[in-house]
Amino acid sequence: MGKAPEPNCGIIPGSSARLYISADATEDEQDWLEVHDLDSFTLTTDSTDTSLNSQGWIRSLPMERGESLTATGRVNVHDEGQKAVDATSTGIGCAALAFYRFRIPGPHATDPDYVDQGFWAWADKQDTAAGSTDPFSWGVALRFWQPPVDLVDGQPPDGNGSSPMVDSVTPTSGTAGSSATVRGESLATVGV
Image 1 (cartoon, rainbow, N blue to C red):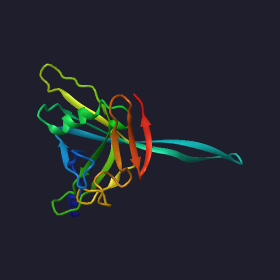
Image 2 (cartoon, rainbow, N blue to C red; image 1 turned 180 degrees about the vertical axis):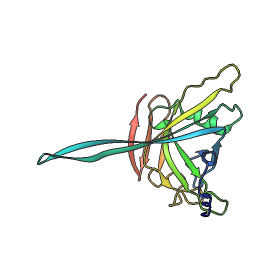
Image 3 (cartoon, rainbow, N blue to C red; image 1 turned 30 degrees about the vertical axis):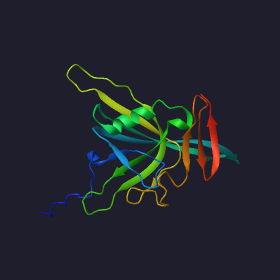
């Protein structure tokens, strides 16, 4: 009789994943607020392609890519992370952007993180519902504004707490909109 296979100790349970929102993305060091009471995470990738006809053979190339992260769980009225995400979910244009962190620790305390990425995204709040004996659900789809970056000790690798690609996102006063500065150049002003 053969030896029983050894258990796969490298499996990472979904419950170990963590979502954070930056308390202040303009600081040099990130102050993260964890979003608690989450049950599931879904990372979705999108792409748009174009086809080129070459002697009867269709060649497909990606023209744009995008990602979103959907997190669902239960409403916790005391959770500062949920409150911060909720507050950004009503913004328009660049004012809707916030800096997020998605972290999946390694399978053991001594292992490096499996995923530790930061990204600018806007929050698309999901429906809140409950049955008569169930807690209210809470959920959000975070639509990535740019590709995620790998974090080092919870910080972007260039030391800039906001992001290596985005210098700042500044809401303007009144209803004039907001703007983003990327690599020192104004990217957009979005009117409301």
